[in-house]
Image (cartoon, rainbow, N blue to C red; front, top):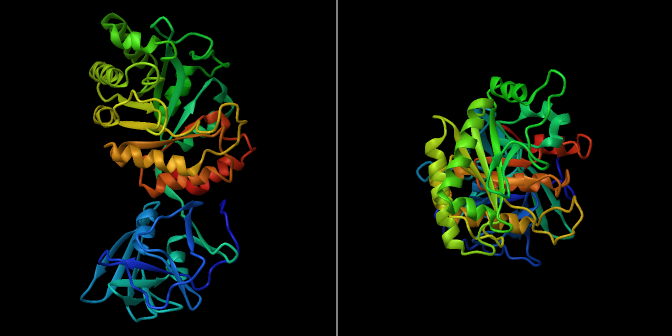
Length: 424
């Protein structure tokens, strides 16, 4: 498993569980410089600053527990904390009692290095023992006063985009829940097509045909989806959305392609809206198109949209309405780096974090949100940062652009992804 570590493993790090939600008053626990806590290389924000007392680091556990997806309950009568987590279909339950150095893990007694204690409505738990039960890696950097946590592997919906350059990695389809095949577009004349220089139905490779790849995916219970690309660089997408005849023709073309080639879903990648033209008007046009397409597709055909992040320059997307119509949204949280930046320069974690928060605040349910990750920007040591954010916010999953880049570092990128997430 690919795991990043900083410094030595913390032997006596302790975290706190907020029972009441009040800011704690830990007498004598203040120290300088301030302690930073990072989860998957992205700082955690707390309602009360982490503190160190007699070599023990304290942080509010409510934030950590939620970020790790651990279910926490407090019983004031028995003074016990129960932490439950499920991974790969197996549930781990840890019960700790205030003042006791004995915990129970799935009903078996385990010795703790220090007893949980209660201070001002909070329970402090020894992280070194507790984290080990859930596979959370903990390390401490004395020089920077930083606690680093690496979240355990988690199941989620994984989607990959299969472009014309993805054929050599077709074996990786089996590690996905769904695959979007980038073989079609609405061209600059407003016509839906499966032909062209950029996006097209690929030629057969011997006995392997586009239809056989799609059918093989479906046979493995991996949903094959048709990606439809369109661009509004010169207003051509707006022209289609505004013209009832062009709308109808494109929708008929998409529906026919889904039926003919056996796709189980459609991913609309309509880019460039709300940059040059009226954003609100374009939002209305896109909403109407998506509704019309959804009603025209064969029954049980999934519909997804790949949309730019809310912290981008493109404002022609009504996230809340689109999420109410579609089965999910892929937030393309990349291309933040300046134009001309060479590949393998990771996208800023802070902006990806902000993009997720803005989408949730805009009304997109977490259960319908996939984090788009461009593998051309990431490295094996940065891709798990982005996956960590998807896990932190309990999103539906992640969508990778593109399958053909998984082995850009031999198998290191593939290994890094597999260490962080697996398909549900």
